Structure formats: C-alpha cells, structure tokens
Image (tube, rainbow, N blue to C red):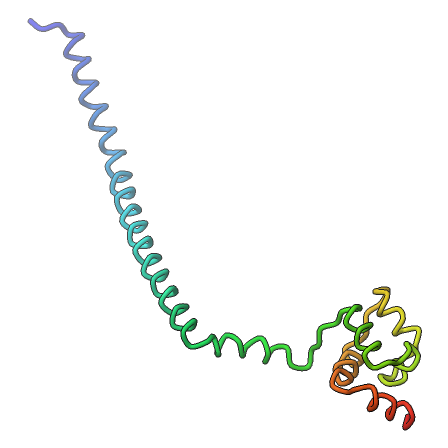
Length: 147
C-alpha cells in the first residue's frame, strides 16, 4: 500500500503545475505577440532608413535646390548682425560712427554701442544697415551731403 504522504505530495505538485501553467500561458502569448510587433517595427524602421538614404542621395545629385531655397525664403526680411561686420562696413564706407548713424537714422552713440556689443539694433535699423552694404564711399558721401 502506497504511503499517504507521497500520494498527497504528488497531487499537490500536479495541481500547482496546472495552476502555474494557467497563469503563465497568457503571459507567454503576450510575449510572443510583443516580439512579433518589435520585429515588424524593426523591419519598418530599416525600410524607412533605406528610403531616407535614397532620397538624400537623390537630393545630393540634384544640387539640393529644394533644400537650399527654404532657408532663404524663411530669412527674407530678417538680417543677421555682427558688431565686427558693422565696424567693417562703416570703415569701408569711410564714415564716422556719427555719420553712419545719420545714414541709417540713428545716433552716433547707438552705432558705437552696437560696435562695442553693448546693444543690438532693432529690426528696422538692421534693414537700413543691410541696404548700406551695397553702396560705396562716394554714394555714402552723397547721401550724407543730401541728408
């Protein structure tokens, strides 16, 4: 006759295995589904990388005309400013800070402050400064005499 303790032990082990399987099987299915999703996303990422590489290669051959035109369109009406550039422009025109201020409609002290990087000109004055970039010494002198 078998021992009652060993029969009870075998039955408890069987029931616990059955209960564990009942709890773990849905989790296994979830893990499999998630791994499939991850694999699918990786494939999609790789295809998109290939597509981006092909497009950038095609743009490189066309001279990046579409890409180069965009920053210019966005920057219309806005001008960059550097104190050194302003100083160079003023010296190229051969005018003092006071005279340069008269040309753009500002004071000589403002021009000095801009050159020393103590202040920054407003957008309207930046447009005036940009307009002066295209003139020479003679034209600047004529403008000063006329103004």
